[in-house]
Amino acid sequence: DVQLVESGGGLVQPGGSLRLSCTASGYTNSRYSMGWFRQAPGKEREGVAFIDADRSTSYADSVKGRFTISQDNARNTLYLQMTSLKPEDTGVYYCAADPSEHIVTLVRAGLVPWADDFGDWGQGTQVTVSS
Image: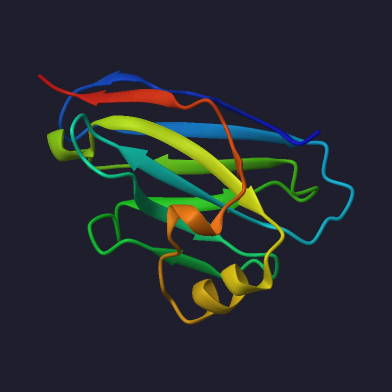
């Protein structure tokens, strides 16, 4: 079974930084894409940042220039470095993964996939940006 486990959430002041991590296990095929979504109370889950099976990346407009997605060389751990955090970045952040080539097409084009494009999810980690 595929398992995704997030860590690194917490409370941070506006303008601060935080790094999220997601450890993936159980994939028998190394060709899969990963990404981060977030969900604020009363809002839809939205895509934040993605890295596809070829290591292309894409970002939501709201986080471009502030967030950076990366993976370790073994592709077992996904990171999201968040800087210049704003109160509107508050939410539960979810790690997602999927082997679909459709996601590769979207990310390569600079687009942000939908939540329905991903089949495997972590349990989420809370990020709160507040003074």
